[in-house]
Image (cartoon, rainbow over all chains, first blue to last red; front, side, top):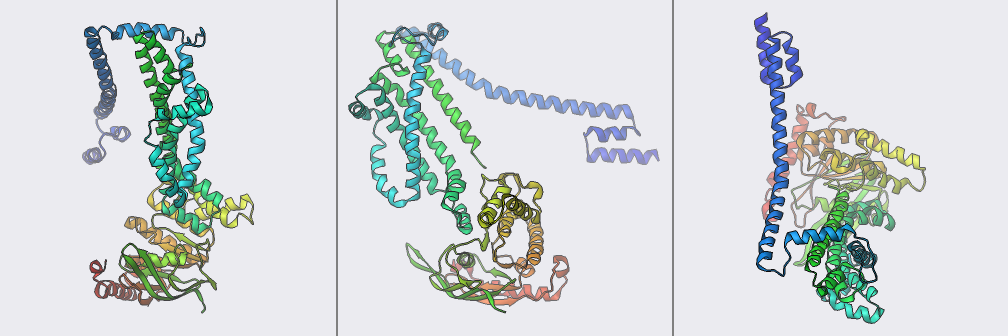
Length: 308
Length: 265
């Protein structure tokens, strides 16, 4: 009798090895202490292995970027030693601490904190980009839905899209007779193309299957629009929006350098006139970081509307 | 017996860049109410084209097609389609996918609660009451296809059109869904046109098997009446001599008389 039990126990051990409660049940009959101990050991071993694996993954995610940044700063430091007009990383850092200690001061129209500058730039981008979305997305829908309109518009779009955004600035200045609307106009015209084109492509690529569903059900135009076209196009549209924001943020620095007023681009130009190179480098980092944040924000939104 | 779906000398020619392509010619078929028709043939034989013609998704080049005495002009929910790749809208839950159809067909006459009840019932019919609020990407391929069937059945169509509905599923899931479909169709007395390339599926489900010749310019080669008693059971049928006779007849048509599919395609 005990022999068979032991055989059964070892059999079940073979078939389901380290599940603790199975082992615990068997333990009542055969060598209680040993089995439980070995089970505990197995569980502890697996847990430790899992922890090691997680630590390894985390290190692999963190270490290379840190090394890359460190190398970048080191090269910068070496270059700044041989080229004295370029401020060293340490000097830039102290200067940055100063700049960011009071980001929202106001000492007159042309001397405001970096916070105000960034916010002003963002608001210009927001208005220009928002207007571009208001015009560009519906236009994209029309071009995607009607081949005739698309054929009409495509030569104009192909012609205007590669034009440097700043080439539009004089026209803006001429029409609006003021710097601020001209800058917004440049943002508008440079960020509208990705939205028009991506939305149009999205509409053209709505799977025929979905449209067949709509046709079999005889859905109304409104339902086709809200339940099928819009959700199907949304991922493409969001890609267009992301590209457009990227372009807008690229262009705003250049536009503000030319138009003046408060803004990060003007700030860069102003600091150049003051020969304050540390501030220019700080501005470059600020522009980069804000651009990165905008991009990540939109990626987050896009992920929300990814259905697969 | 009057014809419920009537197809008379229908032909379909597609315009392509290399000139006209005759997909179908001289199709004559009459389907009585409550009949289950399987369309079988090699790929490229135009069986899906024929189904799309009945669905109204494409217009026939020649011939006349009637459904319940009215000419087929364009698609409509009285001829509901179950698509091969389920075609659920991925941004709507299983419930909302079916509800979209129910709302369209019964929305004018019934209250919101009734529409919801219909949707529930359709999903319960295909055994998905528990998963109705899941998104399509959260359920298995077999479940998606069942939602597709529920969407088609929920609008109480005059004719149910199935375009290789189980083609993309594994053998076990396919068998289960075939059994479910058989039960549902028998319970509702639906008229069904089903495209398939599976001989067993055709013999198991159909009252008549319409065998198509190879394309281009495909037409109906032969029609085989399946006189097996219902309800049919796949395991019992396996020992039924008549069943094997039907199977052999279809296989013979497909692989002896219409064998050279590569040449044609």
